[in-house]
Length: 122
Image (cartoon, rainbow, N blue to C red; front, side, top):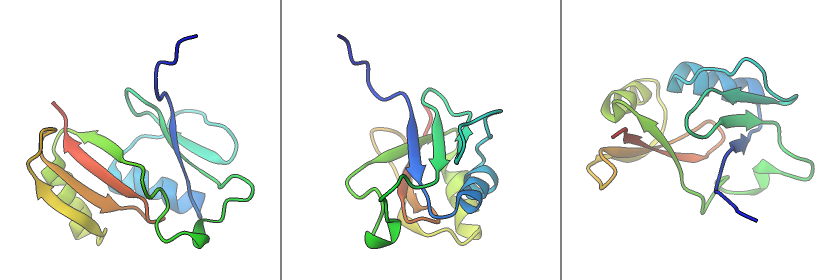
């Protein structure tokens, strides 16, 4: 048996249409041609990313910040430009752009409260 690591990431969201619109039109991701019912999958690389309706017995309103303890990072060819665009759109920024071992990084909060860190692609 060999485990190779993560090969799919999905966030459970309160409003699928709102989350899909945010990741498509505010962040700039592209929808994949087809996805499973109750989910929107994006054509991200190397790992597919999706937003989906909550699984049974998941109450996103019962937690202060969904995903606490999990680090979700997106690669971007210009993190500063995306930061500026998100700021202009009124998206909450948790951490301003700063140099790191992974290039320029910043962290924003999506409509469901997930913290997402962006870094410049190598």
